[in-house]
Length: 503
Image 1 (spheres, rainbow, N blue to C red):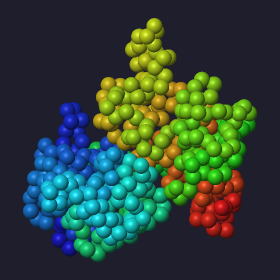
Image 2: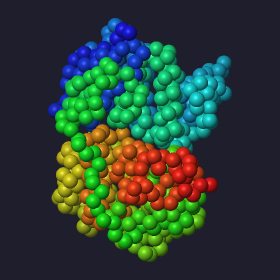
Image 3: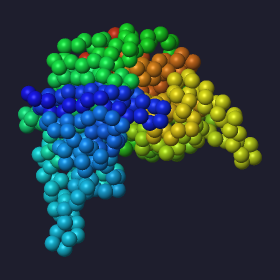
Image 4: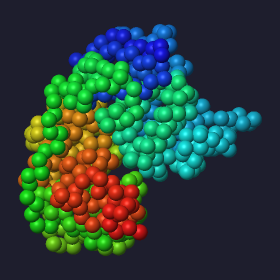
């Protein structure tokens, strides 16, 4: 088919920072085309250019052979481009229906917004794209992250675009939701819609994409129109070197129990028991909404426990709030799934984010000792390989991977005994993932304990020393040793013969 989207010599600078340096892209009509690369490669800037949010300094964009100027989001929509963002654009206090109708809500004869028409239109769109289980009248902010991502995607599809841009669409989706997304992309392919699929997950690229482009340093490092490149070739293009072993060896020897859960009941979790040892990575697997989030949030004191209790180093805990969890002598920290909403303050500097929970350590008679604070922050930035510009720049200006490192660094400064890590590599590139995995292993080698959940089954299997599976609110028996395989974990996730305790 003819080229649906052609980009030539696209350039964008932010002061001394070069985000795009002559990037080129050619995408066939009706193709699902992957754009991949490590954080800072230029993917997010490319997405924003196509969405009309960022105006390039040079270069041209052609759609269907016609040169277009995308000076605003309305220009992009008029040109037939619709974008679903990783950092969701939904307005939390509006309903699902109102979010899907933006920017122009339907009006009635009185020229006032017609809530009935808004709901009916949204319900029809949700049904068309296999999401009729979502109530269009519910407040968007009350929905789980994975459901909000689905609403974001359907809202963008519903504009009937010629080019549909997906920015890390599966980073917050579980296995079932990813399968749903791929069914919708198959429909779009049949309709002739061209899809730009920005992702870090090579397995998904293999499964759904027809072609790919690799970005590195704002330039195209390689491309393929028939997906014949091997994974190691793609990774070398992405980071300029190969990663022979993404996951560090499991060479630690776990010690005595550190954090113990005894028959925890909280929210959708009806029975959660585990023993997390010193120096151990204990994995938790499960499909979305099976109770694993409730387990993590209750262990951080952010959600009320209705039954059972936690013990730390043999002593019973009473966690009424996150303040109880992070206080001296306890040291339980949480890395949440939604870093933009729950992990960092985007408008504040990296320094402010890193020291906010521990600011009293750097104060004397009410005054912040900036030199002492800066020295401590610099040590964390160096250990996590974060640019020193994070000292003064807003966290929102950093790449997704560096934002996540700031979340991690905040808790490393606390000398926490336990890290609760809930999908910590969501939306970060392969190189940053490897750095996070290495940080986790350094932390456990020093005696720390990690409770680890991921939507990526490969991560759970290869990083964890042992695994529990959450199924219908019940945590399964511990899987370890030779039994720790992806097949066995998946069987329990699906409630099969290896399902352990089931309800």
